[in-house]
Length: 182
Image 1 (cartoon, rainbow, N blue to C red):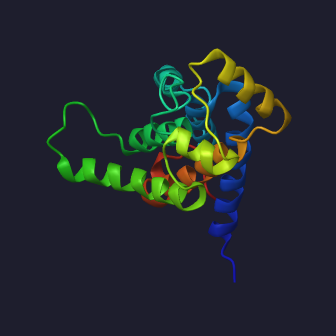
Image 2: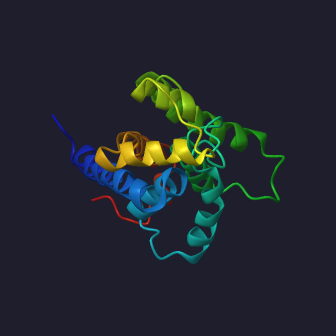
């Protein structure tokens, strides 16, 4: 039997997925997932969150579009999970809180590895497409964008990661959501 809470969570998760896949095309991977999760949790108009969003831009395309770093969607997820824990710069000695943050980020990363074979951008691309692109190469970027205009390969990745991230935040930091669960 389904509880009312799990039904509400499913609505949040479905909304996160929709936003994640939609925002990928609007903002790209890292800032898109960050915004999708934060907006799903009720932070659309929060000026501090909108300032933090700016920090996600350089994480696009496996860091600086190099494709050799962490998938931008995963990097955006790591940012928002970290943000949800509220660890402050003045408390770096709180090692347990830091370990909690990293273990929740790793839970999302493990789900990504299970479904997409890796958390590194070029490896995820290879898993999905059988090849990978270095986005710093204009010809490769153009080829990827042309391919993605037909059927954006990363839309599902961004949607899944946004969904998994909202789920983990609701499990570990339910108070972080500004939207009330019924």
